[in-house]
Amino acid sequence: MTERALLNRLGRELDALSTQLSARAPRAAPPATPPVSPLALQALLDESLALFAALRRRSLRRHARRFVTARWTLADMVGHLATWAAEFRRQAEQALRDEPFAEAIPFALSVIGPNAWNEARAAEQQRRPLATVLAEFERETAALRDLVAALPAESLYAPRELPLAPSGDPDERLRGNLALIVAGKCDHDRYHLARLSAWLDRIEEDEA
Figure 1 (cartoon, helix red, strand yellow):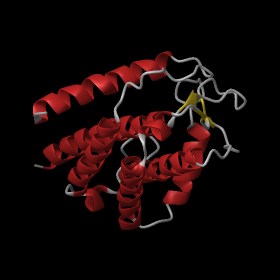
Figure 2: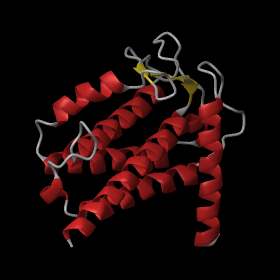
Figure 3: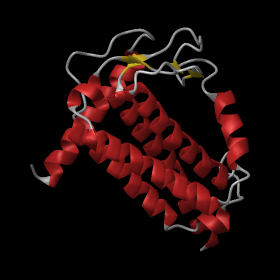
Figure 4: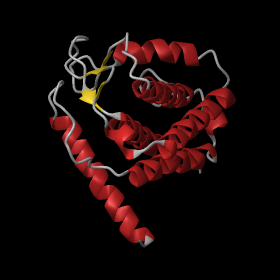
């Protein structure tokens, strides 16, 4: 398969997964035919690492304390990515062990979203050096990629109850699988890394 054909395939599979996730009721079962292949999942994680490596080559330390949003600095946003990288890796390992999740996380499809969860983790990350946070994202993402690469397809797509609660009700957990966790992480990474890159473009253009 050529590189262009692979990229086109990844795009189609990710679009199919995003549509599936946004349309799914909280307790709906995963489809019988997985929309994303194991190869595509590994490629998506490699893409996250490549996009993050490109961000690390930018002037992060210089602008770390500048506000990207009304409440969060650039360092906070990097911490947010690292926190979720660790959380997605933990979720994948816990789901693989068939262990129940004690904590429910309100998902973005609900009115409240994961705001309280995000704020609590942001406060924890603010006490850590930027270099430590950057290394955490790379370490956790690589660990998840290695996990995916070692698993048979049936483990990736076996139905499981996840900690995400799309409606905001902690008793209504999302039914999904490990593939959904991985693709959700990569979609999250792509969204935030694109916004951070565009923000840095504007800052550096203003300084030129």
